[in-house]
Image (cartoon, rainbow, N blue to C red; front, side, top):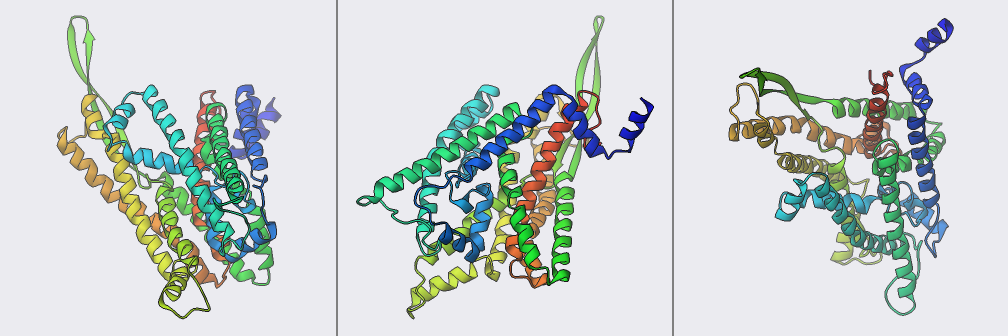
Length: 449
């Protein structure tokens, strides 16, 4: 017994926590179920839609790094143009739209205040909205891959003649693939460990590691640049962890009444409101990159190298400047990420209505009067600390461009995807916290402690 205890104490906390988790039957079942669902997702990611030219598809990804970024949100399925090529991105878009509309529409605002029943109704509306969004995004993608930007990876796309049936079949299969992934993600959330939707994106990013390793191996004749790139990646991961965990704790006191015999006494309890520096997460990056993907894609349809007229030349300029190698593209990305960080943070803050909740629960911030003064104080604090989160996210967004300038490697933007790292670290921390809470309930040491 003494030998076993000593060997356990010498193990790293992370390894010991994993061993402890697998010793518990119910927790082991949850972990294995999560892994099984992720394996099922990877099978879906390799089932292509009808009529795909795989060689042309690979050439399109090699020629355009923008497609590699879009591939992140499909969980790696877009690279195969599979039935899961849309990934869970239409669902994420629908969730963001519903979240923004909730404080604006009285019906949604009332549902949000009805507890569990209201959340289920809002989730159902999110599913309804996901279907048309998946159709629209799917049609945009198949048009993209049937054109010059997609190197003609798909053919026979349109709604005329015999093309309609083929197009409709592809759209239906893509939409069904998205809804299946959403269902699988919700199964993981309910019966597994972690947020299922996020874990599907996480699994897709992890699946690209072998290809990234292959790209680094091809650059082995430049060891200094490769080492510098790896060091930058580790520094980014460390920074993301620090800013993800950073928070401002606002002290709060609660007044309550306690009856002792026939007399009532007033007592106070103390707590705090944690306000994260990066409370917007990866949403601003999704907004910014999604919007900036549109100009280059639209302009690519009008590029004509043989023409000297104004519009083809303008289209070519937009394609270059708003592509992943354009300076104007990265400057605009930084500005949009900062703007969207403030926008999304303030929307979420207004939905939470912290000042009203404090007042309803007899809570107050020391030195601040309840009601409007508390609301104004919280708004000042949130705006102040959001500057740090917004500038950090803006810097994270443009890191690939900075890394390409420092290392001199043209393929840096496809190897070092800061958005992927942000998603990975966020999902990993969230999953570790959930697993840790399960362990702590059973008196085991978790990951963080």
